[in-house]
Amino acid sequence: MNAQTLIYCFPHAGAAAPSTSAWQSYVDGALRFEAVRYPGHGHRFCEPLATSIEAIAKDWIESQAPLDSRSTVFFGHSMGSLVAYETCRQLQARDQPLPRHLIVSGRAAPHLPRTRIAPDTLPDDELIDYLRALGGMPPEVLNDAQMCELLVPIARADFAACRHYKPDASTPLPIGVTVYAGDDDDLTPDELEGWAAHTRASFDIRRFAGGHFYLDTSVDLFLSSLRRDVQPDGSAHDVLC
Image (cartoon, rainbow, N blue to C red):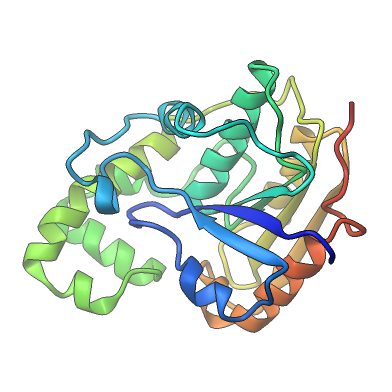
């Protein structure tokens, strides 16, 4: 890869930001990761939490200069898949440049009905247990009562935003979409393949050993696949006019 590819990484529910610094050490200078930070998370803790996926996407777009479509890719995991996708939708509606490819991870296609538990409706102790079972949160955080007091409202707001996000698939994106998922995650083939309705360019699915947070347990394979998929001569090089 001759030119550097900038990958904007949209995090999962409750996260301050993706672990992009750790990922950077696995790849050469051809890739650069940029963590997206949502209102009310991490160093933006003092800001009000956003109440919808649409609001989070709008907040990010309005804080950025126009994208360079030739060198930019979006990667979102879990909730981040919805935010990255909605950001693309809003950029398209504004007639602004889109990334050259969208990679969504660990999330069913957003137009499909979700019949699973609604984590934002759980009592605090059950929500913490849910986060512990899901993975992705450091045990030292979930075992610390004071930290949980800060985390629970953030996670609850994030899960509620995900639950209420119901876009249609009537305006597919003009960029390719690749879906990543762990083999042991509770996502059905139909839920993953449903993302195909949201693109009129290329579409592919990649499976990895592991559960919902396969990108932590299979980091080498995940980043190797990511590097291949964002190469200009690979599946991530397709923007339709």
